[in-house]
Length: 404
Image 1 (cartoon, rainbow, N blue to C red):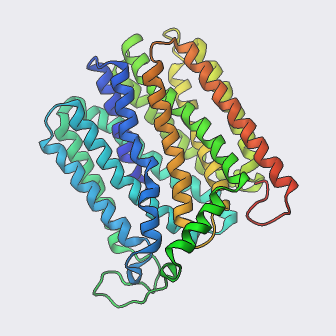
Image 2: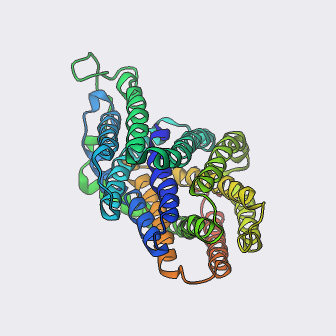
Image 3: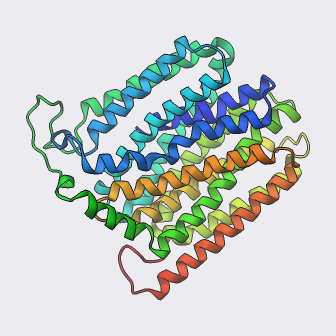
């Protein structure tokens, strides 16, 4: 299912912006398009409380929502068959498609938090994000080639066929063995979500999110994700328009980084579990800082090492996401566990959109200036993470609040 969530990201955040750069769109237009297309991922908290409170538990707490969201994605990709040229319509379709994909992500994440043991979360995140990166690779590279060779029709075929095949998984697999496969099938409900009032869930959620450790981890996540959003809006514009790269060349290198990052994430995630995500964070963000610094000389000339830099950036971002999300999973508890995690992920994606919108406002500045700004964001993220670790050490030890 995570591959289905990665597909619209690869399509609307990678291949289409690169194609727009090749079509001589203004940098501000491209940055705004990326921000609009990515924005639904910051609005997941709108649907998460509904999923926590309502559903059809006889088929599973989350599975019916997964099916509905995936059907919505299939219909959105089908709309590409009739989509006329125009930036406004394309941005609108990107927003709607990513809205359905984000809703599905909320459902799958809530399912994962309840079913996964704490000591295996980083490893599970490695596999889940690995699937997501494969979807990003398919949308980023495959979408780029199809967009150039067959236009919107090629995108429609890719999206409809891929999402329909993935839709078969939730249709044919139960969330738990005792659940109904279809509404008319035999089975029982095991959900307790409806036993809590909306007020109880809301108060518990607010208390957990506003805890000092939670706020500091969120601040750290916001800063490093904003740096990523800034950089990924800069890349297609600068490489295609200033260094004369083909838009498909950029998509291919980004896709390579996604695939390699997925493989490395699966291999490294057991080490993250053993070291604990809170400590692994320092090694990975230090590597990310070095990559940002290396980009300053590389991106100011037509260096043959730029492709390697894009791959290294993809690996570091992937590993950092595994660490931070595994750490945030440990903060999730209570009746509104799905909503709490959705808030965390919504803020993560809001920060990515904020970085893209920031680039739209600062696109006139030099590449060096923008990279130095990104380095400053990463340093600030490290400060917030250090403060959170300090609070953990001074607090009474507890299973959900240790310095992981």
